[in-house]
Image 1 (spheres, rainbow, N blue to C red):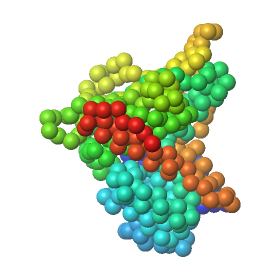
Image 2: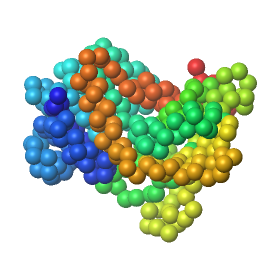
Image 3: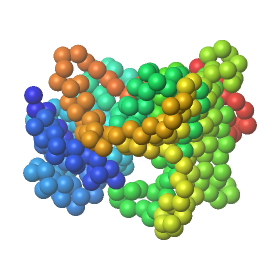
Amino acid sequence: MKLRVGIVGLGDQWEGRHFPALRMLADRLEVRGICEQVSHRAERAAKELGTTPVDGFRSLAARDDIDAILYLADQWFGATPILAACDHGKSVYSAISFPFDPAEAELLRHRVEESGIAFMAELPRRHAAATVRLKELIATRLGRPRMLFCHRRVPLTTTSPATPARDQVSEARDLMELVDWCRYVAGVEPTSVVAVRHAETVGDDPDDYRMMSLDFSQTGRAGDGPLAQISCGYYMPRAWEEAVGFRPPPGLQVVCEHGIAFVDLPQTLVWFDDAGRHQESLESERPVGEQMLGQFHRMVTSLVRQTSGLDDTLRAMRTVQAADRSVAEGIRVRLG
């Protein structure tokens, strides 16, 4: 069954992830319209896909020849296109930052649940080939994760329509993605968090470094269970090309009961155990964008209503909010 979709927002992942995936899945996903706040980008993308640009997301969601909305990038109107899709019973694939305000996030979750639509939040780190293989190795060879070290270095760049200015919302999204990744790999829920920050300038909101430690202990005593150290840095200008590429830390390092693994997305996985070093060959796996949109197609066309990633994203968001409280009060915050 071919799914007729409308696109809202293009963003900085359009050329590298979403456009190639839509081309490969043309037999399953047919783009009927594109709504983008930068008109010339909408016109160019529409021409490439043989469709038409659309002026407003509400008119796109209301069209009878649209089955689902692909909301692929943050736009000035926030989560409103998701609510419009709920109003018209259209399924949603969402790659945007969820509302950071708890009340707004809960309203969004309630509207999605109430509407009965299929909903999928884009969580690319979960679906990357290296993560999928890592989970297999944890189950078969490496054993239970004990410690996770998750680091992301984000080079500073000039803003553009495709890459808007960095702010608290974008920083929170970066951290939420890393928190969700660690939760998924650990396989259990965190029970407490302690965090620190470093402001880019004194008294300013944007940070150039954030770090948190997630404790996954289930005994009530911190340190008895798995521990994840998560950091995200924005302190290195992209113009410093040599420095940006100098000894970058692995995206994820996982210390397990019977070995240790090093992951760099999307396809690099090296692990060690008593037998020595093992290099996984993952180059032949499908790109993550194609995997995620393919899964969304299966969700919408199945007879069972499904939501994927919504609750996971909201849990990760609550963890980041708890980390903010930890920074403000200088305490370890329990997670309910």
